[in-house]
Length: 89
Image 1 (tube, rainbow, N blue to C red):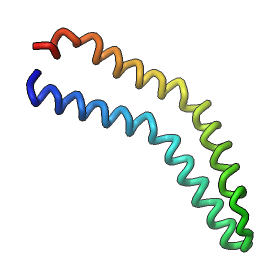
Image 2 (spheres, one colour):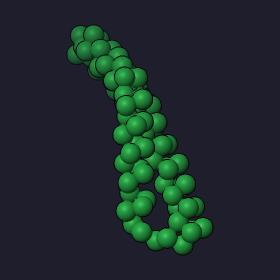
Image 3 (spheres, helix red, strand yellow):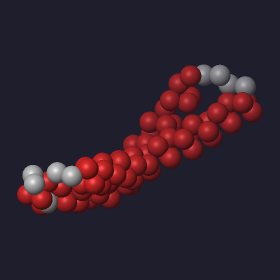
């Protein structure tokens, strides 16, 4: 296996991780930012107030984006396994 092959596999793996984790992280970031603004304006400093909306939002995003995320992961896995003979040279 050449260095270019290893770098290409690593690059594809990193991009797949970014694409799969991205929607959940963006939802958690936006909800956390919204709750932080709400807490700052109302001066409510309850720790669970920031935790519960993020959990519910990430769960909803997982339900919405889950099939797409699974498809991305299965495509990447299929690509790796279908070219397995090429990596042994």
